[in-house]
Structure formats: C-alpha cells, structure tokens
Image (cartoon, rainbow, N blue to C red; front, side, top):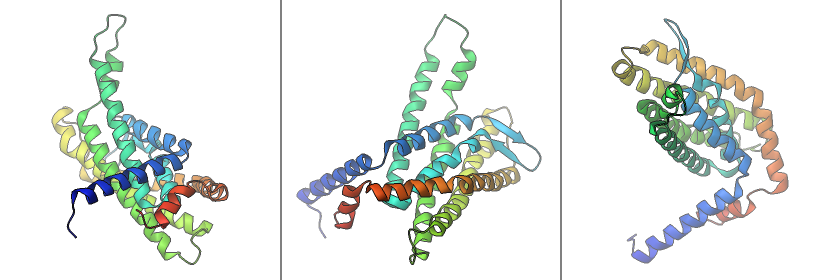
Length: 252
C-alpha cells in the first residue's frame, strides 16, 4: 500500500493519541517506581560489590528486580508494546538525568571539596552505554516472553499461576541477558582500557549474569503477589479502560 502524505499524517496523529492515552492510563506510582529504579540501577552499576575468581556482582542487582516487576505488571495489563514504550521513556529520562548530573559535576565550586561527588555525578560513559543497551534489549525480550507465556496459559489468563509463570520465566531469562550484556560491554570491553586494567573475565560475566538472574528471580517470587494484587485491583477499578478500548477497537 502506497503511503501518501495524508496517510502518514494520519498515522502520526493516531500514534500520538495512542501514546497520550497510554501515559494517562498507567497509574503514576508504577511509572515513577519504574523510572527511579532505572536511574538508580545506572548509578549503582558503577560499584562492584563482589569479585572472586568465578563470580562478580555490581550494585545494580539491588534494584533491577523492581524494574522488571514493573514491566511485568504493565505488560500483563496493557500489553508488551505498551511496556516497551514505558521502558523507552525510562531510558530517555535516565539519559537526561545523567546529562544533568554531568553538567553539575563540571561546574566549578569553591564552597567545598566536591571531587568525590563530582566523580559520582559525572559517571562513566561506557557504564551508561552498557546499561542502556542491555536494558533496552532485555526489556523487549522480557515483555515479549511475558506475553508469549501468557498465551500458553490462555485457558486461565487472569489466574495467579499464569501471572507467576509469566513473571518468573520472563524475568529470569531477561535478567540473565541484561546482566550478561552489561557486564561484557563494561567489564570485558571497556574497563581494561579505561580502568587501569581492572576487568572481569568471561566466566565472571556469565556467573554474574546467572547468579544475578537467580537473585532477582527470588525477589520476583517474593514480590509477585503484590504485582498480582495490583493488576487485580486495576481490573476492579477499570484502570486504563479508554486505552484498552482504543486497542480493542483496532485503532492501534
């Protein structure tokens, strides 16, 4: 089908309506927690918490489970495309935050010695690169897997078991890939060059990814009842009804 200017403008208008409806529909506390967890994950990733010959863990593991739980909730209720859009928004806000932090870090001040704070706020460009790439790839994988597992349990799509399997399977696989991609980019490719030879081995990256995925899966298991309660409550209150009706009407 040949695209004409009116058709292109119509699609842009339709997409604008879709996105506007989506971000008006998702309760702000979930979006806020999601964005804050992504920003914190980027900051915490600068610190290695554990490093042995066979395992290494960075600080991002402490908060990354929250990001994936928020995505699981959004995917379950609004669909994987909606969750992908929120993940992209969180990444853009994270990049903006890092830019503001960097500007603050290079502004001189004679009020005190802010070297330590400047180093923290200034961040490291390849850590930001690694975390952004890993997060965006793993987000799409997580949201797609969550939706795909839901299709398998189509006989009882709203049951506790369905939500649990969707969350557990998608979280474990996506978290493993997120941890692996990030650690390879940062600690195998760039760290040896920019951090005076400090690096992780490939074995450490794989075990970090696996251990992190297991730890985050445990957190998902502990907190998934809260996620299920949130979704059940949203359905009772008919949250996002206008957006969901818009989708069901075939306009997206």
